[in-house]
Amino acid sequence: MTRLLAVETRKLFDTRSGKIMTAILIALTVAAITARGVVSGPRLHTLVGTAGVGFGTLLPVLGILSVTGEWSHRTALTTFALEPRRSRVLVAKCLPPLVAAVAAALFAMLVAVPVTAVVAAVQDVPATWEVAPLALLGWTATNVLVVGMGLALGMLLLNAPAAIVICLSAPFLGSVVGGLGPTGAFVAGWLDLGHATAPLTAGDVNGGDAARLAVSALLWIVAPMTAGVVRVIRKDVT
Image (cartoon, rainbow, N blue to C red):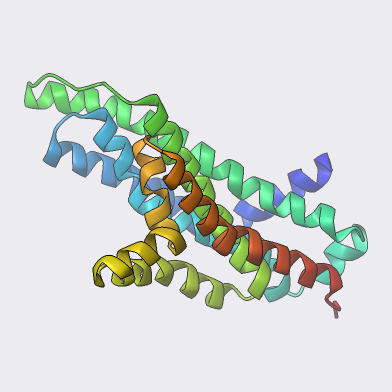
């Protein structure tokens, strides 16, 4: 299993698409945090949250590419011949993107801290260093859930373009439904992962918020992931 994890982690980052996605993610994170610091001032919590704009878009795509690459590159036969227990391969494919989501949150914090200090010194204003631990943990957990959604859709469809389109259009559709009055807001609160994770990102989750998050995660992560695992395990590989 250790070797499988090492191989799948290398696959995630050493392909051309993986390298491009990683480089864009790093550059976008640094640029977004720096620009937000110049505009909004040296507030650490605000600067860290700014990285979520790129994370919510690029991290799920990285997860999708990790589980669909074998099928688009037609290397699944080699992979499953070397390790016939497909469930182990799938676990090894899913863990690196989830760990990358946590690492991305830590990277955002490492970038935001010096940017906050530099902006405070340049603008000659006091920096605001307060960060709510629960909000930071909730934001990190939200990144992990979004990556889980990408993995689930990629596993179910085994087609990167289709999974990426659905994953990126889902927040937009959720916003549209949420804007359709009280009924739309109620439906979006239960079925849209973006709406359901908002209290988690804020670090203030009550019983109703937890129930809505569970239903949304069941719809977008658990159900498609389960169906996708069954499909991959039973799928003929040629």
